[in-house]
Amino acid sequence: MAGAKAGSLTFTEVEETKRRDAVKLAGLAMASPAAAAQILQQASTEAMEFTQQAEATTLGSGTLDHLDLAVTEFNHAYSLKPPAAVFDAVMDYRRKVDTLLKGRHTHRQERELLAFAGWMSELLAWLAHDLGDARTGLAFATDAFVHGQQAGHGQLCAWAMDAASSINLYEQRPDKARKAALKGLSEAPADHPLTVRLHAQAARAAAADGDADGFTTAFHAAQDAHRLLPPRSPSRFGMDVLPLADYALTSYPATSFIWLGQAEQARQHAEHALATYESAPAASRSPSREAIARIDLAIAHAQLGAPDDAVALGHQALDSARVVGSVLGRAGDLTTFLTRRYPRQSAVEGLRERLTAASAARPALPAAQA
Figure (cartoon, rainbow, N blue to C red):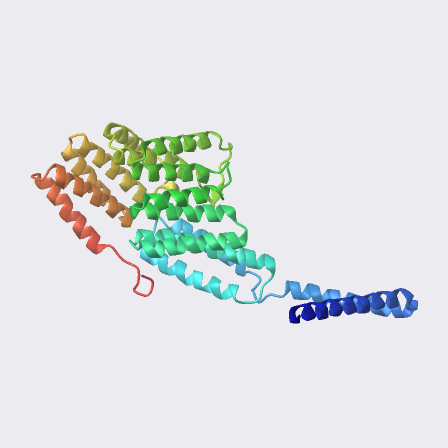
């Protein structure tokens, strides 16, 4: 009975409100022209207040332009400057954007701020991965995905899952890597190079899981998507993203064939990948990706019975200007294989000692971020 009574009261209140509104409308209709004009004038004033409220913001006039420039510069610095320094700078800006999001802004400005926050977190995910902290990297990849969703920015969501896929793969979690790639594909534009890359990520994850058929299916999907790309390649913060798709079609299968035990196929793809990296314009060069291609080629040579070539390529990889976590991890795979296959080779021991020294010298995240 109590519930019915409450419902009845609510219904009565609604009906009374409707009647009052109807009386107001009737009053406006029957009012004198002067009174009606006064009512409409008051409504006009209120409409202006509504508009001012919608446009109210604490953001400075150039704040969004400044953030766009900052994100662009950070992305250009990614492969050129030490990851620890870039991480600190991006993290500082990410905190500033978080503060701005808690302030007063328009709905349009909020979407833009959410997107900037997401792009910075996506970059922080890669930087944390480079610094050897997978947990932090995955946390920022998730943050980038969520902010991309809130901003209605599917492409940002897809880039975030590209990072999550790579990080999970290096953490030897191929199933999670494949799921992240597929999650990214659900957000990526079909005619974008990122779609090629995500299919290739799924292929690499399948290979890491020992699924040769899954690798073949996903890699063919990457090749098909590459053939359907439009003539003009899109850019990301002023940089052409087509090379990222091209690299995925060369370097990812090299790694995959190593994991699948097909050394000759791995050697061919690794040589192609290395040639592709070395011929890229200076602005598109990636020292860490080149180093990984050398390691893939080294492992292929080791599998084919050429340990001296493998050791030489391993040293070349560690000569890279950007020996980050992913490079050290793959170099560890190389030295482990060489040590097991060629235990009496002094050159192998020399490479292993150099890797140990490089790992010890690698910078890490500050304690507050780790």
